[in-house]
Structures are given as C-alpha cells and as structure tokens.
Amino acid sequence: MPAPSALAATRRFVTDERKGGALLLGAALVAVVWANTPWRATYDTIVAAVPGGEGLAALHLDLSLGTWAADGLLAIFFFVVGLELKQEVVAGSLRDPRRAAVPVLAAVGGMVAPALLYLLTTLLDHDGGARAGWAVPTATDIAFALAVLAVFGRGLPAPVRTFLLTLAVVDDLLAIVVIAFFLTDHVALLPLLGGLACIVVFGVVARARRAPWWVLVPLAVAAWALVHASGVHATIAGVLLGFAIPTRAVHGELVGRAERVEHAWRPISNGIALPVFAFFAAGVTVVGGEGLGSVLTSPVALGVLAGLVIGKPLGVLGTTWLAVRLTPLRLAPGVGLRDMLPVGALTGIGFTVALLVAELSFDLATPDGAARVSEAKVAVLVASVVSAAVAALLLRRDAARARPADINEDGVPDDEQGAFGPG
Image 1 (spheres, helix red, strand yellow):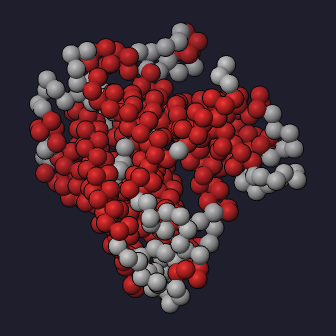
Image 2 (cartoon, one colour):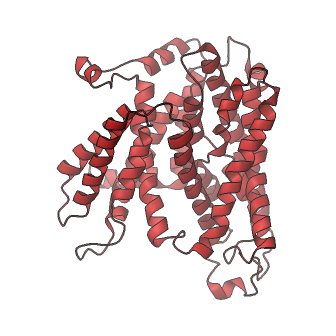
Image 3 (cartoon, helix red, strand yellow):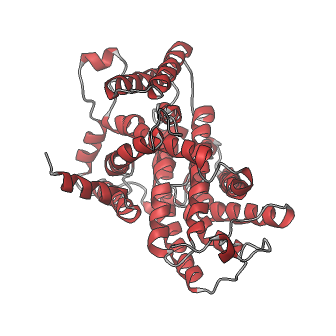
C-alpha cells in the first residue's frame, strides 16, 4: 500500500483543477490516437468486451466495458456533482436567490441558445434524424472549464470563478433534467420505486449518529442497479444519492457530512471515473472512412460545432446582458459584462457530459444512429478544443485590461465589497 504521503500527493494532484484537467485530456488523447491507428480494432474490442458471467447476466448487468464506464463510473462523477449542487443550494452561491439569479439565468440561456442553433443547423438534414441530438451542445464540462480558467485567467477577481462555477453547476443540474426527462426511452416502475426506496433509506442512514460505510455502500449499489434496471439512466441515481447526504453539520459535528464525503470521493471521481470514461467515450475513428472533413460537415457535427462554439457564448452573454440591462439584477462585485464573453467561451467546452448525451441521443443499434453518435463525438471534441483556445485568448486579454472600480455597475465600488481576492 502506498505511504500516506504518496496518497496525499496523489489526492492533491487529481483534485488540482489544472492537473486534473490535464489527466482528463490525456485519457481522451490516448483514446483518439489509439482509435485512429492500425491497432484500432484492439481498442474497439476492449470497449465492447463484456466482463462477468451468468450472475451478472441474471441481474441484467452483463454490460460492455464502455457501458460500465458511462453508466457505472460516471455515476460516481454525478454523485460528487449532487454533493456539490446541494452544498451550493444550502450554504453556497445558490443560497441567496438575488446573488444566484444572474448566473442561473446565464446557464439557462447557455443551454437554450445552442439547442436552438443546433435545430436550425440540422434543418439541412433530409430525414430529420439528426434533430434528436439537440441536447448534445447544451452541456458544459466543469473540470475542463475550471482548468482553463485556472491556467489562463490568473489576475482575474475570484468572483469570476464563482460565477463560472455557479453557472456550470446549474448547467449540470439542467443536463441531469434533460437526461431524466428527454433521453429516457422507457421506465419500469417497480425497479424505479425500489431504487428510490433505497435512496430514501440511504438518506436516513446518512443522517444517523453513526453512518457505517458497510451499510451505505450496499444501499448505494442497490439503488444504482435498480435505477439502471428501470430504464432511467443510472447517473440519476448518483445525483439523488449525493442530494441525500446532509450538508449542514449534525450530531455536534464541526463539518457537514456532504463536505467530508465530497472530499473523500472527488479524487476517485477526478482521478479514476472521469479519465476512464473519457478513454472509453472519446475513441472515435475518423480514418479509413469518409474522413474528418466529411464527418465535420454532416448536419449533426455542424449543429454541435455551432451550438458549442457560437451558441454557448451567445446564450451566456446575451442572457446576462438582458438581465442586467432590463431588470434590477446585477452581477456580483468584481464581475462585469466584459467577463461574460470569455466565460461564455469556457462553457463551450462540452466534453464529458456532452459525450454522454451524444451516446444517449441516438440509437446505437442502427447504422444511422451509430454514425450520428460518432459525428457528434468528433464535433464535441473539436468544438471543445476550439472553445478552450478561444477562451484562453479572451481570458488573457480580459486579465490584462484595467478594471473599473465598479465593474458590475451596482453603484458601490467593488473593493468595498471584498470582490478582489486571488483570481
């Protein structure tokens, strides 16, 4: 077993925004390169391999490794997202409706605009099948967006990061709603009710004075398996389990249990779940077929590219401008309208959740559906790289410019409100 110092160093590495983003990118690059080499058949074999025996088959869990990564490991990521969401709502930036209103509206605009732009772009599709992917360009990758901000946004006030984090958290919540209500084909009621019952019991145990892991973990696994069997995407179970953990300190504890659990599971999410999912999801083959140019000019790819690269920043900037110009709402101290363009570009980094939504939007069992999934994934990867590059340039330009004393235009100098912490 590694020494505690080695474990601590590993934990610090994978939870650091810049290094965690680099690990995620590295896993995706390995998959993309491997899937486009003469050995790509080996990659496809690994993704399609089905581990386990008759026991898993009896439980309807005889899934491929790629499906385990999307349905199983990604549930850990969404569990951490659920913990983060609840903490933000109960004690964080979403607690005060007036403070949260603008980034929440920006998140809504940043999802509606790319979806509409995607639908407009896919009017070119003769049979209409491409329109099923309208949700692909609506998702933002928190890990990558914060990593790019951390590297290229040095010198910007801390509230800019808080705004992006709030926006991205709400974006994830809306993505969860989309997955639950629009990307679920059928629902088996009894397994779903059983899964919800397990989550309720999980929440009761999590609030007890003693909450043993050997009770919580089996309950969580049972909830995941039952929700998966119901037809609802299993990542929803991860979110609900995160919501079930108490945020406020209980039984005289000094720190809320949600914060402690997030501290324990975030390294697993960042260091294992996300990179492994990226490895299995990002390996799209573009050689030996129609070629990258043909793929990127398909209606699906054009819609995803337009939605992420243009629609995201347009929706964030436009919605924020309307909110602060036409209503009494204002941005937080230290944040101005000029920051919305680089922040909007950051939200165009779709990646993790966008790749998942791409897999859920089209029917992989049909040749047309499988081709559209590949087109959407290639477009997500290209759009995320383009958005990250554009955001990096805009962030450096924004950080180098002098900032007015009252950049949020609320009539009070920002430095009197403690806005200018470390960027």
